[in-house]
Amino acid sequence: MIKVVICGAFGRMGTTIGGIVSKEPDMQLVGGVDIKTGTFFDAPVVSSEEFSGLLTSTKPDVVIDFTIAAAAAKNVPIAALAGSAIILGTTGLTSEQRKGIDDAIAKGNVPAVISTNYSIGMNILWTLIRDAAGKLSDYDIELTEAHHRYKKDAPSGTAKTILQILQEEIGPREEIYGREGMTERSSEIGVHVIRGGDIVGDHAVMFSSNYETVTLSHRAYDRAVFAEGAVRATRWIVGKKPGIYGMKDVLNLS
Image (cartoon, rainbow, N blue to C red):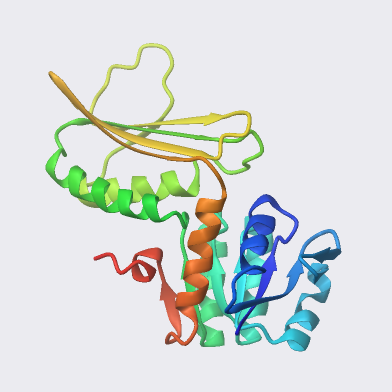
């Protein structure tokens, strides 16, 4: 039985993941952490100040964190020190916060999956974008992403991963975030961010040249698609050697 603790238990993703974990026959939801305390799916939810004590009493195999950057930067070192494997889906981390997380995982000698997107479809799309970018590097490239009105970081972590892939494949390009006024196009990558309503997550990359346009896109209709991926990663990480992995490892993508 895989024992799981979820950080951000009462958040959108935390609640969705908790609901899935509580029904998995090989998993046991033993607790959660949030600003509010209480219970979810018959498991106790404690404050961040009580997180270490929860880990000591429940001894979870895996800690899942889909919170905000500031919280994740504190949660991961505590979980790593306790010897729990980690599934991290929090985005918006600064380079300093990410370094602190990486160092904590190394010091704790635990395995962790870190990804900006746990959707299986998005991870496959990343491989398609990489392949297309290498072949269409002379095309104009535009990236568009849309999320719900409450998303705090912009552009999204997924969009930043796409930009990283594009930069790796086509070489350094300036990134222009929106356009206004007299802006003659050059070799830049255009980046456009939309926030509104309850959009779960839309991402599209357009490669455009004279007479044709190729668009690669992904649309998530429900947060369950990310939660299912996180649960898949949770099952996969148990027993793995210490180190940091990505969803490409979970999905066995080259």
